[in-house]
Length: 269
Image (cartoon, rainbow, N blue to C red; front, side, top):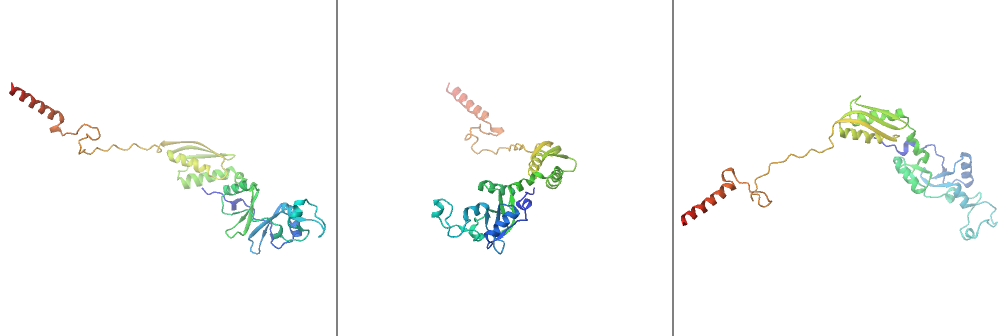
């Protein structure tokens, strides 16, 4: 089944700022667009970093040059901050920015967000050029798919195109993302495959498997017992009785031996 990727849910209308943008211009963008951060790109749209309100508060001092900074001793020992409204985007941005490629699957994006404790990722292509942005809420769009769309994909992609199940053999019902499969198939392996492939359809939250089958082909048939070859050691090596031929069985040989003993005894008397 086709897996949803970042490009399926990302926002392509992304506000960015050039690397030589002034601090005042960045503040204007953040204020006018009511956003918390803006990506910084070079002349080829390659992502260099991000400027957020936190970056501005941490790296900019508002005041006249030469006036004592209104900060603690730890800031007086550090490098001088950027004075308002001087400075450029490169001087105040944080980098490198957290990015992900548009072809990445949604679980990969969610894992990066979780590990990095962020709520958004910049989407780039193979050359790290900005293509969009994906947020936590975007990752949930897969669960907004209509039940009718999910049902149509299960019927046509899973049952017809993948498993080649004839129309009418299996019925599909979808209620709030829960798929219910009813009907009958020829083999049990088809039942198992139908349930598992339906679970992989984007937007499916659960699968209720009510399918029946004619043959349980998940149980391996017992191998036919092959005829044992003649043992050159007559079976003594593996603990079996020797396989004598019908004309010279062990009973006949024992009988001949006993007859010889009786004959010799009679001759001695």
